[in-house]
Length: 261
Image 1 (tube, rainbow, N blue to C red):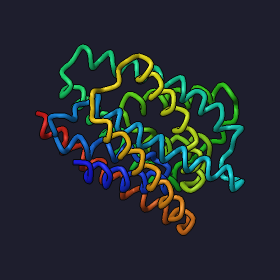
Image 2 (cartoon, one colour; image 1 turned 180 degrees about the vertical axis):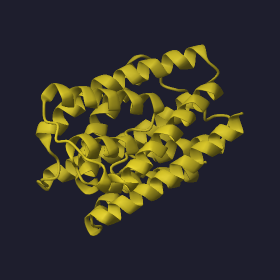
Image 3 (cartoon, helix red, strand yellow; image 1 turned 90 degrees about the horizontal axis):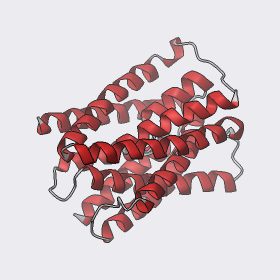
């Protein structure tokens, strides 16, 4: 099981670092698809969040150290703060639903929302050049946008997912390559506070201590590989990989819905 966790985290984090989708949007449905008795909704969400946070921490800190100009702090900082607040609310809603429903039902709800959301972002990315975009810069608008993104991603346990890239492209006119770096910056904040809330509220799932360490290792390695590959790809290359990742997430999520009916 440890090898599977490492490979899943590494694969998802590499794709996530390249496209800015966090990796949790791939990690979670893959772990859900295993349908392992010890991997219920809480365990999967926690492990996914840890992996995503590790990858985002490396990617963002590396970008800041190298003084890359892709992160627009004036826009992304208020969005990140909003995502942190939204991430807390999303995690509160998740644990509230988990306490009221069967964990299998919670996973079903998450998978259904993820399918609808990913289908929407897939078609947006496919026709993005034909869809007019905006250049939002107002601090309150940025904060509220981040709040919504953080709440959804935290509730689903996916980090950020394709929706981040779609929103950054539509509202802020960011191309996939620039959007990827800004998305990871936002994800870093939302996941930090999401994990912190889970720990401080004593909702940390009872899992083997080795699992989180493996997910962290996979997330960090994925961050290293993803950053290098991202530099090698042009904007169109990142866009095509994003579309491929969307298709993978849709197929995995549909499969998870089917096995839980």
